[in-house]
Length: 261
Length: 271
View 1 (cartoon, helix red, strand yellow):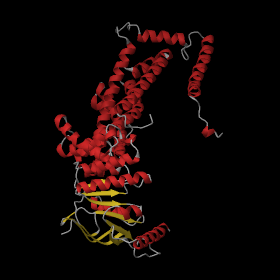
View 2 (view 1 turned 135 degrees about the horizontal axis):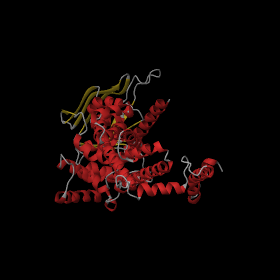
View 3 (view 1 turned 90 degrees about the vertical axis):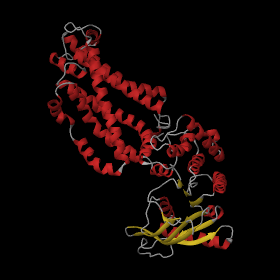
View 4 (view 1 turned 135 degrees about the vertical axis):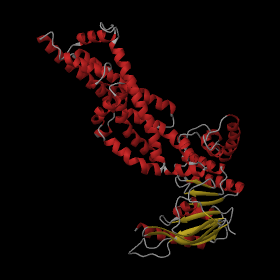
């Protein structure tokens, strides 16, 4: 049985169809990148995996069980921005998850337990290259370092599924490359199943094990909201030839232009 | 260069800021002198001499009848009322505001009431407070609470809802329950905003304090001003108003400093 199974999934808001008839099976430990034009439901799909949005029709299951209807600690998330806590230092941000887990009432660790937890936190900060910044506030960090922190914060809880919503969209290209290496390293170490939404097609082509392209197959010029997007390509990364990639690029670009019009 | 791009240097800014004050003092001085020249016992625009004499009498000499230092007694009484009123209002605002902002069920239940309550003109229910709580301290404190709390509650709820949705999702993915979300994410982040809210609420709080003291009291800054009004004692009223203003500025600046000290992550780069 597959780890995550999506069957005949539809999502709409009133008359607007966002996703139509999505079918997908994902094995544990896969690294899926989701690409597509804006408005093609990538983020909506991610929100459904997170539990922030519910499917209109169809089923979405994790090991045969329906996805819980609210976010929980089995599914980590990294957003493009705002996913670290501004009132906590770098170290406290990573510690937070452990505190919440161990102290249901206060949500705060003291004394020896705190020191123990900090050992784990510090080795995680070491892994993401933030050791030197452990006592800084998030606003003192660059965009790339903030994302490192957000990733560390999520990996600390060892989520079964990690969701990334354009995590590197606001970063410089050079830094983006470093972040890719970091993400791949942590993914290999933990074996977490990853879904990453990206705008950058080439990022999608290179990173991860599987590429999912969200695109609109049908389009009614008089009623652009009538049809939703679906998965048009589902490819194993590494076995893909360049022709397919340029095909995808052309298709996605066309949809993007249509959406804009 | 365009006017919108011309910035004053520090010294120029300071001078520009002081000019209106200097002008006010100057105009008052000239007018006061003119009146006093015509009638040395004029009470309407007392000069510096009369006012210092009045301050000396009120602040540094025992009252002949009661043996108290009146200005000190008035200040202590007023500050107690103000402190209690604003303290209670801020606590209420924090609790109700956070619950309103965080829990949709509580919000649906309480927001209409809070909104309606914030529309009631507090001075209109002052007679009710006097009838229910008597003419003692309680009714004055209650007026300040009723006058400032509802607006602060709404402000707090709004501040909670302005926290990025991403944070709320994130902390849930770290396993937080509802209580932990409040305790570790919402509360620490709205504390500095509460202090800001209190700073804004102090204006109305002073208004209600003076109003309540004017109507029924035996001591307090507002009481004194309205008492000596009967004798046209501008030489007492003006220094009292100045003193109230100074107190208000001191309180405001203290709160601002507290905010900066305790919450270095807040208002980054601003003041």
